[in-house]
Amino acid sequence: MAGRAARLQVESASIGYDKRLISQELSVSIPDESFTVIVGPNACGKSTLLRGLSRLLKPSAGEVVLDGADIHSYKAKEVARRLGLLPQTSIAPDGIGVADLVARGRYPYQKLIRQWTEADEEAVLMAMNATAVTELSGRLVDELSGGQRQRVWVAMALAQQTDILLLDEPTTFLDISYQIELMELFTDLNRDGRTLVAVLHDLNHAARYGTHLIAMKDGAIVAEGAPSEIVTAELVEEVFGLRCLVVPDPVSGTPSVVPLGRDRRQSAA
Figure (cartoon, rainbow, N blue to C red):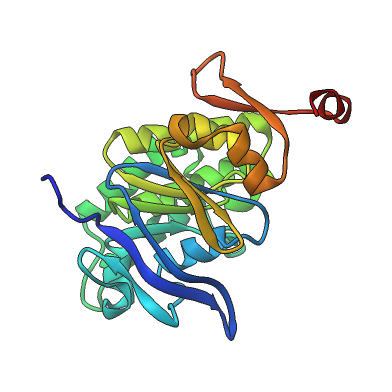
């Protein structure tokens, strides 16, 4: 419906840790059914914004709005039925199996008198199938490679069956092949209608896979929009302090950032 407000928004929010503010008067809307990627240099406020969106941080002023209401007006389980979160660091209990970990994604639907149902079982099986971890279901999480473990954590988030999924640096410390595998998975989830919001360090991954970018610096949003519209050499230098060329990706046609080496920087000056 034209003019309909986005499901997830930040309105004039001041967000930080204890008395240290990271962002002040921050306002942004996450487009529904987008793959929104937040980029920027270290300590610019990317993960702080994501934590605010996920209800882990409460703004000292302003609010985060989910489905028309302040996100902190909901109970934790209600939020977990509306959005899923893959945190930056995920630690599985010792000795837990893959299927058991994925099943924990059904926690928001459990009650004291509610037993495990066929709907729960179906949600877990669908999540494992979507992330290609079904064949790992009988193994211990501790035995898996980094890429396999990350897919299992994504499966747990998918088992929540939420339309919104927040991802905090989901590809960090993974080999390049696993990074691409996960980014392709996220793209598939987005094409199926989910709204994804991810914090990424790799600007080229953000530009290739994201449908909407939010560029941050010093706690503020410098630019936002489609990668093809906002990723320029000028923006990269402003945000990251990096002189570069921005050329079309030969595979996807999306913007690709090519840093200028020291000699080329001198010759281009």
